Image (cartoon, rainbow, N blue to C red; front, side):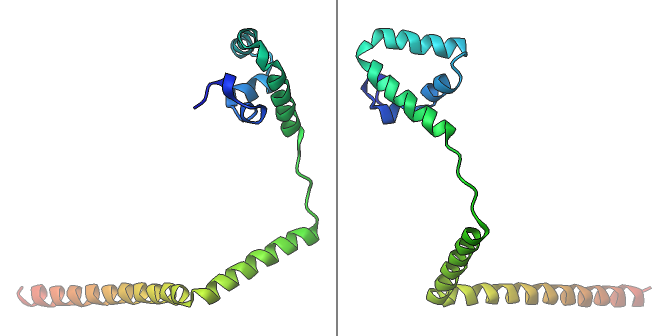
Amino acid sequence: MKPFSELSAEELAMENLFIRWVRFPDDPPIRSFWENWILKYPAMRETVANAREIVLTASDWKPEMLSGQEVNSIWDRIINSLDIRAEREPGEASSGLLRSRLNTKSIILGIISMAVLMMLYFFLFSSTR
């Protein structure tokens, strides 16, 4: 990781410690760190100012609500992309179905096997008494 003094405004604006200082300037340890840092690197004042603007702009940004038509359009694209994927990879879809059928058959076979074993057990031990 590069030291803060070598970062561009964009890179600085992505640093958590810097973001926290911009968004919560009343935090004494962080405020002290950045104030001392700027005193140590006065050539970075403009970079810090630009990075600060980037953070403030990003913090104020709120995505707009989507209209019902836009939501439907997005869902249609998702469904279409899933349909296209299923068409490209038909083996995967059928193998999933085959796997679930095998699992169901295995469960039924297991239940039948247990029932037969229990009947044999009761038959063998009840006839010996």
